[in-house]
Image (cartoon, rainbow, N blue to C red; front, side, top):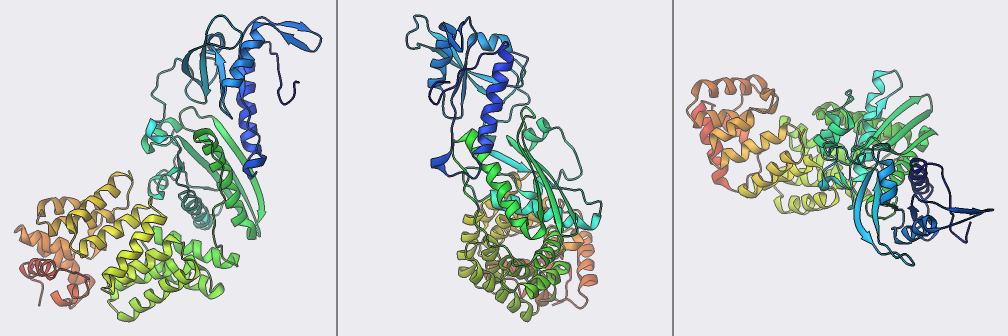
Length: 518
């Protein structure tokens, strides 16, 4: 011991390096939730060489080099000499970044220095490396439901989505959208393959068991390039404490990642949780149905959550969005009025919630309040830039305002940056291409939707008619008439919030050519 320094002698270079890694990982975990001024950051240097032992003291050039490397290291970092790398190569799951030769104080010969990171084993092929663009990126895999009750799946899904949403608030992290991570639900892909496919450096694997009034959450943060476990924790809590568990998870993950990537600490995500567990449970059930595109079934669950906790902002927001979707089918002005009230209430309760602004924007769009919709779509994107569904709805707004080229770029970007984007985004893309008179491309876009009959095929009918596929247009028209008997061109299109009348006329001309009644 020497002041705030410690000198340790090992019989093996491998043991020394592994101890250095364990120390840094342990200190990163100890710093979670600690204010910046009270955190302890270690620098570590490791060298291999002869030493002189006198009682409790060590002397010699081998010691001096290790001490000089320690002073060069970054806070939280480890530097090693070439002699160490030559001994541990292929024996530890680490990578070594060559920093070149350095002249060290009181040493006549320069020393080749390497920075240690939990990457691939030195000398291995680079196939498992996360790409440079993925540094500071994370995918939250769907929580595994350990309750043994399939009915509790919504709870695991909801916890996953909450973690994704809260992590996305940190600008230093890139968080994979839920559509991509839920694609792997029920599968167990190799981490290297997962990291490559999703372009992420880190994965959170978790499980949740809910029984009675208690919940157990286990979580581990893994580096995809090596499979190294950076952090793991188990939480046993009353259900009422689930929001505290979420905050602890987020704080630990962000602290670990940022501590490794940008040497920054975690800031607890600010949220306004509901006052009642029952309200949250109904909310999770509703959101699970919403994510399955079953919004009309989901809306009553949000209404139940609000009845229990009238100040539950997110329940109001999601109910507003569901009511807008319901309006697509019933075209009832009262439904849209309810949607507006739900969105406005959500905004009153939490003006910093992206979903609240999303609900207001959607209701404003279909109320033909296009400028108000713009304000809230822009705020939604600013609060949650990673959500491709929000990006898709904003592209839909651009489309109705006549900004077709911008809308096409926006929805195409959303589809490209999410390997498993919602299929309805292809419907938005198809509508834009239709109005750009790129009809064949529009048909191809609509073809990505597996069951087009669920999307009210007004646009597919018009598109096929305008490329003179009369038989195809007739089939699509029959789907419309079966879903909405007695439909006319006016009933199918008058509610659509077009700012440019010529675009509406183009759609009506296609329906007319397909034989839809006036």
